[in-house]
Image (cartoon, rainbow, N blue to C red; front, side, top):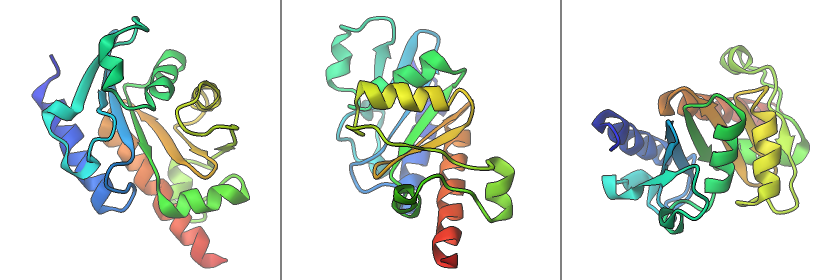
Length: 184
């Protein structure tokens, strides 16, 4: 059973992601790891209006867990991140400026906050960027070294100890991308 404060984090951060414009109505996803369990948003859930029923519990050790049918299609990427890093939480968003700049290559922040949190943000370019094993492998390998990564034309994956930390990195990335875009 997931702690009520973590459920509240899912709901609050989902709303914040939508209001900040980091996802469209039914896009993006979040997860938290608790031992061998992963709690992840439901596929096609409305990120800005999550309810407890939108948080799916999956046994990360069981590839045939029936709950996977209801979990976000990006579960494969989340699971790889947890397997390959010490992450406690993952946020996947589609920040518009950062996603736009992902076509030009890695993002190097020029603002103080972005530079403080990450010197650069690498861009992965898998053949199939959405919920593929290739994306899972590339993203999880990069997140061993950094806390956030972009997938060209698709969006960002951030890892943190908590959902709040992963969200903070995601919103910082988008602010940095906004500044970079407007400097050009």
